[in-house]
Length: 251
Image (cartoon, rainbow, N blue to C red; front, side, top):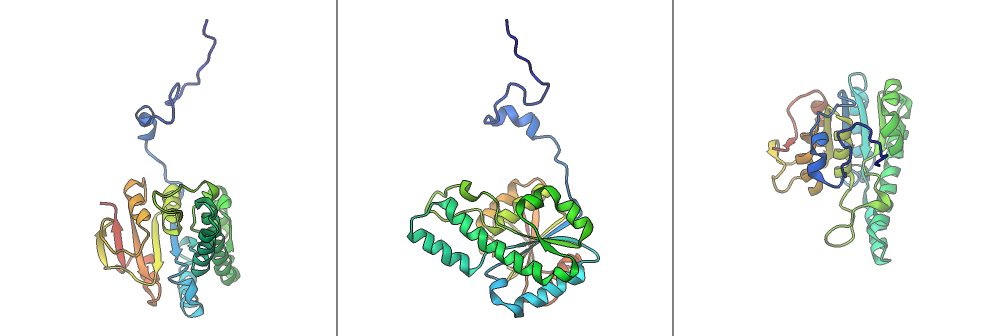
């Protein structure tokens, strides 16, 4: 006699490894958790490594947007992470360890920006807090700072060639923005790209190739904007829905 019991579910008696069997569940509508959220990604090498002349004007633009927008500000790693990964490669460290080294520097950049925005009630929060308590923090403050590296850490996927981690700031920010159902994703670089509206397949875009690939599979973030953070007012224009920079669309 079969004494087994099932809980009624779309996934009952199915394996999560079989894409065809989980398709009835995977094709259900996905709810946007934070449809009012604007995610702004500030590049480590492109912006933060340039120092006060690049950082302070950009922070002034963010402060001016605090009254109208609720922002998740994500930081990337810069030249120190490249140095650390270079040493790690020389020592034979695996991909997961290299990812953790780079994420640490992206986190340091996040603490730096949060300190400069502290007078406005902005603080740095780790990934776990972003995943579970972001809405509460943004109910009390106009913005939250975290880092854009995905929290794979030692579980980072090994690349097909070499050992450098594939999931870096650009890819991590897109994954997070899509998971939260954000309204807008903006990459602040030292170049806005070609301008206008382009496909994710356009060559030469100043965004990691993996982010361009992931936008095609995203549920919510089907496009993002690239702006030149060294051009005064460019970020303000994007947050104000004015036409500037490059719109990169999945299609």
